[in-house]
Each structure stands twice: as C-alpha cells, then as structure tokens.
Image: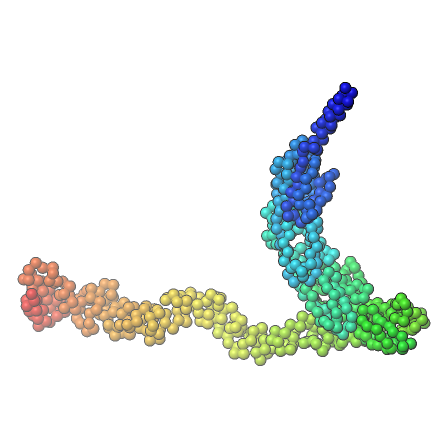
Amino acid sequence: MRIKKLLKTGLCSLFFSLFLTGSAFATTMIDAGAYQGVYSISGVGTWSAITTPTNTLSLPANTYVLTIQNSRFYFDVDASGNVSNNIASPSNNTDSLILSGNTITFKNTAVNIDAGAYEGVYSINGCCTVSAPASPLRTLTLVPGVNTYSLGIQNSRFYFDIDAAGNVNNNVASPSTNTDTLILSSNTITFKNTAVNINAGAYEGVYSINGCCTVSAPASPLKTVTLVPGVNAYSLGIQENRFYFDIDAGGNVGNNVTSPGPNEEAFGLSTNTITFFNSDILIEPNNTSIPWGLTGIGGTKIGPQTFTLVDGVTYKIANLSTSPYIKEPFKVFHPCGIFTGNPDNPNVLVVADDSFTITCFDSTPPDADADGIPDANDNCPNIANSDQLDQDIDGIGNACDNDLDGDFVNNNVDNCPSLANPDQADADGDGVGNICDGDDDNDSVNDATDNCPLTPNTDQADGDGDGLGNACDPDDDNDGVADEVDNCPNTSNADQADLDMDGIGNACDGDSDGDGIINDVDQCPATPAGSLITSGGCSGSEFIELTCKPENFVNHGSFVSCVAHTANDLAGQGVITPKEKARFVNQAAKSK
C-alpha cells in the first residue's frame, strides 16, 4: 500500500514537473540553411551555422533574442514550442527569418566577393578567412537584413549591410573608406586593385608582404604585387624587421602614420613604387678558417664575403663553429653605416670570441630624379616618372619625350601630340588634327554621328537615305549618275531625259517642255519645242486631240464637226495656219 502511494506520489510529481517545464514535449528548431557564419540565442548558447546548420532546442515558453552579427531578433516561444514575433520588441525578423510552427528558418542570400588579382587574404566577420589568390571569385551565403557585416583586409575593416533583397550597401552607422577600396553593387563586392612595384635592386635576401607573399629578391629584383588601395596597413618584412606602409585611393604608397618605423632608412616610397636602399657589406672574420653564416642569406661562408643588404635592417652573423650556433646582431644604417654595439669599434662584431669586421659601401644606384628608378633603368633619368610610361615605346618616357606619339612631329607643333599623324591633316583648320578631332569639319556634329565628317553639313541632309550626307555624296539621288553630270542631282532619273534640252532633266524641270507654262498647270507638258501653243500650253494638234476624242461622239459627222469648229478657233487665235486647219478637218473626215 505504501509502495503504491509512493509510486503514485512520484509519478504525479514527475508529470507536474514536466508540465511546468514542457521540455519533454516542446522543442524549437533553428534552421540556418547554408549560412556561413555564427549565431547565438541569449542565455542558451552560440553555434556555428556551418557545423550546426540545424539545431533542435528545448526552450521553455519565454521571450528570446537571436543574434546574427550585430543584429538582434526577438521572438517568443509558447508552451508547445511554437515561435512567433515578439510584439513588444519589434524587429526586422521578416527580412531575415521565417517563423513558422516550431521552426525559425534563416533567409539566406548569396553575396559575391570579387577580389580580382589581389594577392592577399581577407575575412568576413563571423564567417571565414579567404585566400584571394586561391579564390579570386567567392560566393558566400549570408543572412539578409543584418547590420552589420565587416570585411577585413590587413588591419582595416570595411563595414557593409545586406538588405532584405540581398543587396550589399555601405553601413551608415559605421562609415568607412569603402569607396576607396570596394565597389558595392547589387549583391557583389568588388575589390579596387592597384599595382605596387617593389624594386629590390641587388639585395641578396628575401622579403615578404604581409598577407600576400614571400619574395626572393635575387630571383625577382623587380616585382609587381597587386594589392587593395585604401588599406591600413601593409607591412614589408626583411629578416626580423617590419616596415609599415599604406596605399591611398590613388594607388600611391606612403608611410603608415599609426605604426611609424624606420622606412626612410630602408626604402624610397614614390607614387606606387617601393625602392630598396641597398649597401654593399664586406664581412671579414678574424679567423678565416671558421664556418659562419649571415641570416637570410643561405649557405655556409668561409673567409671574407661581400653582400648587398638593405639599409635600416638588423642582420645576424652566426658562428657555425659553435654548438648550438651563436648569433649576434648588427645593423646597417642609411646611408651606409654599421652599428654592432661594440663600444671600442662599432664596425667589429664579436660572436663567440671570434671577431668579424664589417665594412659598408654604398651600392644604391644613381637616381638623379629621385623617382625610385635607378638612372640605368630610367627612361627619363632627369625627370621624375616612376610610372615609366612610354606611349610610343621608343625608350624615352612620356615625361621627357618631345614626340610622344612617335610620328616625327614635335609635341609643341603637333596638332595631335598623343596620336601618330605625320600628315597633320586638319580638315576644319581648327588646329586639332583630324585623327584626334571629334568634329573634323567643325559643323557642331560629332564625327561619330556625322554623315559627312569631313564636309560641314549641320543639317545632315541625306536625300537618298544611304547614310552619306548630300554635302559629301557624289550621287545624292542614288540613281547611278554622278552629281557633277546629273541633270537632276537631287531627283532620281537614271534615263537623264530632258525634253526641252535646257540641261534640267524632266524629273526635276518645272517646265519640262520649255513652253513657259509650268507643268502643274500645263495641259500638254510634252509639247515639242518651237510649237505655237494655246493658253493651256498645247500645240494645235494636241489641243484638237484633247477636245475632240472620237469615242466621245455617237456618229462620225459630229466628230468631224467638232474638229472643224476647234480648228477654226485655233486658226483664229493664230495657233495653226489656214492650211493646217484644212488638213486637220480633211483628216477627220477621212477617219472612220
């Protein structure tokens, strides 16, 4: 009896507990889909969507906050585990989440990252780090309606939002230099890349650009690296030294203000070029039989050795006769100085009781215009032009080339100094050569749309519609007869018929028979030349034919009578002679 009572009491307690918590029956599902970031629920936990795309939770009825990046989405859970928007704390859940039944589903969107030729790495907060060279075009799945994501390049962060439609935009609350570095258009972020030239000269070691690459200077003394402008800060590493530099929106390199370093000892920074300041260093061990080495320069050395090293950098000499090897540092100063820390002789470095005498010789190649390009390689050695632009590829840079386009016409008299035009043709005489003149005939119509680009014709008239304006069309009416011999140059008349022989073709002659009566009112526009005519422009015979048509009379006698009366009138007007009158009447009488 007691056992039954205990069982009954225990079961009631268990059911009551389950009723209060609901955890045995009510579950809530988080479906993050393909989202590549992290999310958290306040007081419950944080998850990576990549490793936990679906997450089943037992949540007591309450209000919760789901956080994605810096955005907080409030939702309620009822006793059955069903989710709904929290009315008291409205949010943009509908832009980012779907709440249905007991499931919260992330609305995913694709964001394209086009890093182009950038040679470094970048990261998206809460998502991933990407090597641009390995993945220059990368599509990431993120959640729309979230503020704020950030894209990290080196030490810089660029903030962006994703709207409900999946478009990327600058984040207003966290303004940045996105416009200097990135192009945000629809669902794509494109890197603005720029070329940075590294001129290591004769340096015999290696160097590295953080986030990018390690370069062997002997193998690649002139190296062009593609980096992203507007980023703070890149660093160039030589041995254990790092030199920081920035790249502005124009692609120019400069010292990094927030991380100052001895850049001016090691490099020349000019426009988009970093030039190493090098010195020749002679290292002479007092014991010429011991093996020794120089950090960053491979191989075991015996006896005196000469190296080309970068100024402003600390190197180490290793005494390889010791075990383990003992190393001691020395620094090369710019221009061409040595510091070993030896109070007695700054040029002598003691490494494990063996001394090394270090002598510096300035090996920086002459650079008269200080543009970072040694004179021997500079196509304008006396005028700064680090870009080395040479339009006509004649070995003379644009900055000092008297004939930029290589057409053998000096720039100061060339009417097209940037485009080769040895003929100097200038149709409109405006001082700008045809080859670079947008309006060669100066008729205010651009050559690209001008139907007579070399002949002024502002009206652009084109009678035959052949795309060639009348002003320069040798056959304006397109009848196969050249305008210069065409008796109707603007009216098609391949037959060139000219009844009155006045040099104007019938097709365009207002009085084609030359009788002084214009065609529009001339009853007989083809009257032979020299004929006497009526006031309507007809000869006697033409007028009789028009007036007395046989088919208009019921009997022959009436027809003959019409001819007789008409001929009589014409004779009275002097259009025909009495003899002609008699002939017309006689012919009518004989006709049947």
